Amino acid sequence: MKKMELKLCAGTMCYVMGGAQLMEIKDLLSAEELEYIDISYTPCLQQCQNGEKPPFAQLDGEMLQGISIETLLRIIKEKLNDAVR
Image 1 (cartoon, rainbow, N blue to C red):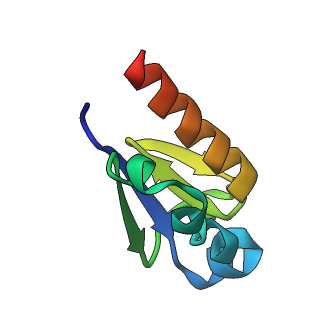
Image 2: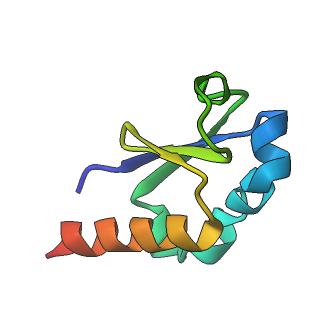
Image 3: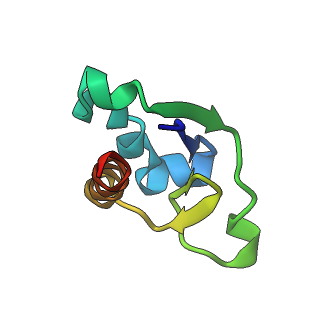
């Protein structure tokens, strides 16, 4: 299975609007799940100026806006389950 690529925005606006919680994703995934995900942080995903709602994450090229940690975790687990099937 190809690793998923997760980029989390660590910019100020995203951080204060919930991005700090998104950074806890590593603590909520198992070691086995983490083997299939490359997690990185970026200073900005350039979405705030488009009027989109922070925090932002990008998963395999798909931009996710206004995402909560619960929703991000659910999406990741669904993608992992689909890939295993």
